[in-house]
Amino acid sequence: MIQVDRLKSLFLELVQIDSLSRREGRIAERLAQEMRDLGATVVFDQADAAVGGEVGNLIARLPGTVDARPFLLCAHMDTVEPGIGVHPVVEDDVIRSDGTTVLGGDDKSGIAIVCEAVRAARDQELRHPPIDVVFTICEELGLLGARHLDIGQVAARRGLVFDSDAPGCVFTRAPGSQRIEAVVRGRAAHAGMAPERGVSAIRVASEAIAAMRLGRIDPETTANLGVIHGGRAHNIVPDEVRIRGEARSHDVARLATQSAHMRSCFEEAVARHPGAQVEVNVMQMYEPMNVGDDAPVLRLLRIAAERVGRPVRSARMGGGCDANILNRRGFEIVNLGTGMRDIHTTKEWVRVSDMAAAAEVTLSALTLAGEGS
Ligand SMILES: [Zn+2]
Image (tube, rainbow, N blue to C red; front, side, top):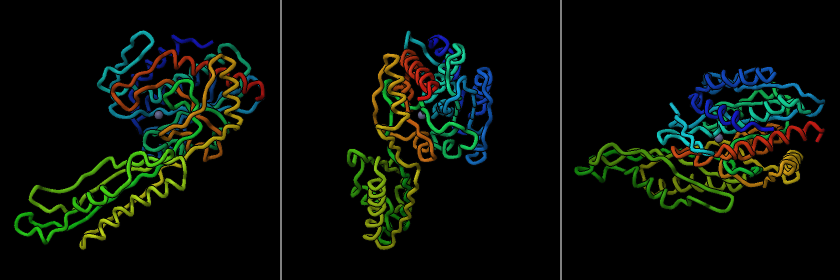
């Protein structure tokens, strides 16, 4: 049914096409050709204008061979840095990067699975519903492609996103996320001649951070400060520190509480130091995803997976994906694991057999959807 060698060679080809966020033009062209070969109509939406990219989201529509509700398959085209000039290394079933870049299995494993499942369905003339394939841009920049997806061009309202690690897992819950940026301002002064005239922004920021709850806050919530910049020289009382961080939670209220706590730590520290000021910006990145255990798309996937002897179990993710956005925009979507491992590192790897297993489950889901489920 699924042709493992074909899946593998497409994956190897795709990871060697550079496609950093906003620079997905070449891979989009290659995938448009792939989809047209399969008999799809391909359009690109205008999301590139909104994000300043090379190309919009790719939307491919394949006619069904039966009259049934259309089904969506979605993965993202962009990869993280260092992601230019990927040289995949094949060791039997495992494909890894050569250690100088990421592999880009996030999310080209998802793309290869989608292409193979659709090709298998077409080759074997299976009874399948109309299939909408969406390959998004700029997922790694905060789900920007999905956010600007022209959903008027997409007929399906249920389906699968392929963008997570654990094979055999279907992710139904994912946290929402807020980004936090703080600028602490003090007053510069000569550190030796007139330190009393200065207000140290580093000291104020340190007090704020020392008082802050960070890391794993509760089973639903995490928080992190990831970047700090400040100061000018060892002999100048520092007048400015910039800090960037984030909070995530599966629970909207807890997310708001954590972000408010981080903000107030900065404000309280500033209040103890006359002359200091702070500007805190909290930006909503995306909302949590929470697809119920009784959701029809999850039921369909479970039955489809059991039919091919590859049962899936539902799980929660620690990060966001396009499904966070799509579930908020009127879709019913769960995220099926592709087998990508150690993602966003130069040690990234994937097993071909894991991708093939996900493709089998996907093909089975298309067949089941064609039966009217
Ligand atoms: Zn991804």
